[in-house]
Image 1 (cartoon, rainbow, N blue to C red):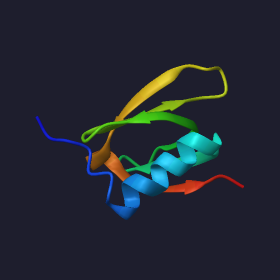
Image 2: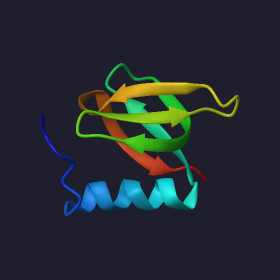
Image 3: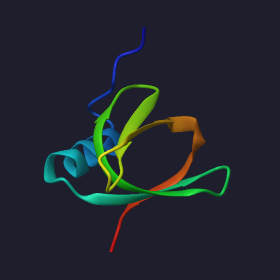
Length: 70
């Protein structure tokens, strides 16, 4: 089982987005665009809650980019 490498800048940036409750856009390799707030991350996935408070687990390798919405 791999550990979340908290020293990596990308991991720290996502932790900041989680802590601050920032709404983000996730662009996926399928060309879908998801919006919501990230609640947690692990080495393989992030969990995004939409505006209906419904969770979506997204595999990291499916993400093209992630950015704060706005």
